[in-house]
Length: 117
Image 1 (cartoon, rainbow, N blue to C red):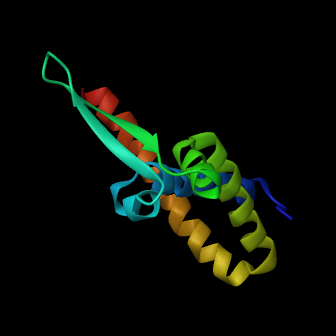
Image 2: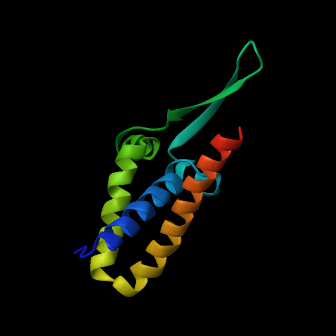
């Protein structure tokens, strides 16, 4: 059980970062590749937009839908981190701390970019 606001904060930021890692980051594209096909279209003004087409049917399609939805994947990431926190705290704590630090760093980077742009 999450017993402090600090633990809740860490788990929340770690869940945010893990979800973004799975759904958006290039480093985890190998996880999404069996379930998504990325389609690039170039507009008349030269801008390139990337669309995702879900592959397959049944379970494969369901997983593809899950991996394309930030909110859906976020629920599963939060559940996984919380279960790990409760069942294996010695493993969970370093993983959660690393993800939380990376999550806070990504928020800071986003704020700094917006200020400087």
